[in-house]
Amino acid sequence: MKIEVGKVEDFKVGERRRIDTPSGPVVLFFLGGRSFHAFSARCPHLGCDLSKYGVIVREEVVCQCHFTHFSIKDGKAIKGATRKSLNKFTVIVEGNGVWLEIASNFMESGSSGTGKTS
Ligand code: FES
Image 1: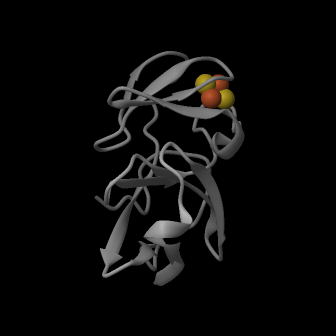
Image 2: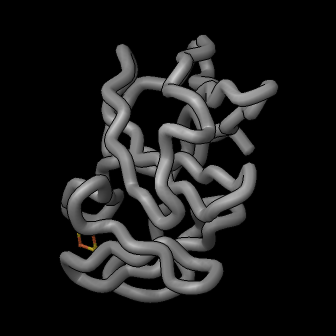
Image 3: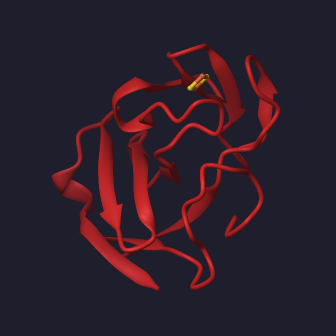
């Protein structure tokens, strides 16, 4: 499933945006240029909303609820309160359009593993 989320110029550098999809909430980070990163918005630890409590620090997504760090590359937990991974989604930039790709078998569960895309 491909969901259009806007145009590149609609985003401010450093912006964090919640996208509600039929499969659950997703948080989209824009780091400038054509660099977008999308993850499940629900932290796999205790479910904090990463569209409110998630920040990017260098190459990591940090959940500020209990300071778990996840790799921005693949969502793997690096350190903190859980070892569960964050689901990462593919973001496609075509021309000026920004699209989110959600695997058809992805269902938000708050646990790691299912539906992960690169
Ligand atoms: S809910 Fe995210 S680290 Fe605890």
